[in-house]
Amino acid sequence: MSGPLQRFRIIEHSAHVLELRMARPEKLNAMDQRWFRELTHVMGRFGVEDDVRAVVLTGEGRAFSAGGDIDMFHDLGGDADLVRPHLRRVYEAFHSVERCAVPVIAAVGGRAYGGGTELALACDMVLAGESARFSFKEANVGLQPGFGIVRGPQVIGPQWTSYLALTGRDLDPCQALACGLVQEVHPDDELLERALGLAGEIAAKPPLAVQVGKAFINRHTTAGFSESVEATALLFGTAQHAAAVAAFRQRAR
Image (cartoon, rainbow, N blue to C red; front, side):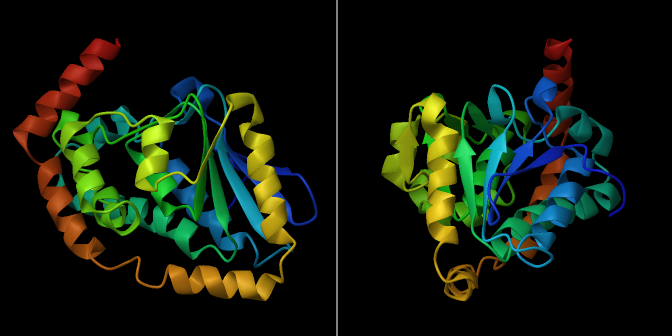
């Protein structure tokens, strides 16, 4: 991928620890096509082209990420020839976090909705601020989180995944901690410092052992995603989805 990053900023905190910050605060770090391409690109570089040993993934502004950009859903419409490649691009981006050579720690403050929660599920560990809220909102627009409904049962179990995917309700940090989505909860003003401290602790370990551990833990994470692509693509073509997206965009004007 050529050109500078537009959806992310890379901030070096030490020789071995980087912060990857989503940098679209005016859109609550919503995910568009460029966002997915850039995430895949940078995750493939960390620990391969440099001496990075741990990455902290954060969001700029008042949200971690509000998920998929609703305008992108509108542009895709119900055309399966557009939807399938898009879904594969989405899954490839989230898989790139799982396959990244080094551990990725999510530092979640504010909203992590839809793809924001899916991104957290892809990370190796999640620290949350007291303002964090996790949710799958896709059912509200006639969809399901294709990555989340496969990865979710592996991380938080089928019942918690059902609770999120079928209701659209929010989880607060304490609920997220209880179900295993989050490993630590901190005051918002301490969140980044704590996440960077954890990254530094990991970076101080022998790097090959850490990389082998991560790779082995994530060895089965792609199972079930080809079926999810087809099921989710069908939902994009429904009248219910089209009507829900149109209503959402109308309210947003």
